[in-house]
Image (cartoon, rainbow, N blue to C red; front, side, top):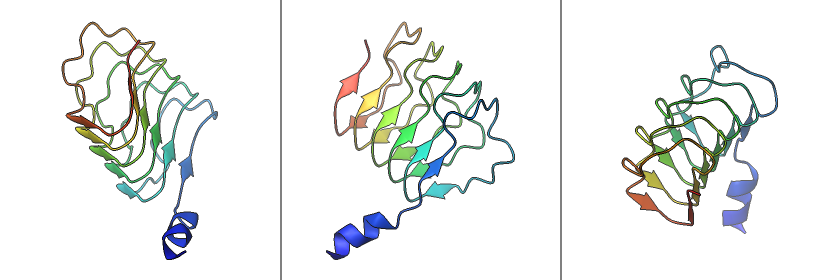
Length: 123
């Protein structure tokens, strides 16, 4: 029971579906204990994102061309699908859940995570 109570109180940050072009000024902490969502926007950069996300990180369906500034560690899944990425450079080294980078402009899997605890989607 104690374990479940901990996860009920985690802070999730949700900036999805807000037509954002930047995360500047959103006062985002460097460490997010829950999940972080910035999907379905018009983001061109992940600048101002947290450095560590203990839950899921979702930045799919933006117009990102780079993963620079994304978290270094993600404890859940990491979805960066449906962007304009040509490289996985700056990708987190450790993703404890699924990793999805499908529907981008990737020409190589160089720089992919060193560890993915779940499924790896790259179609």
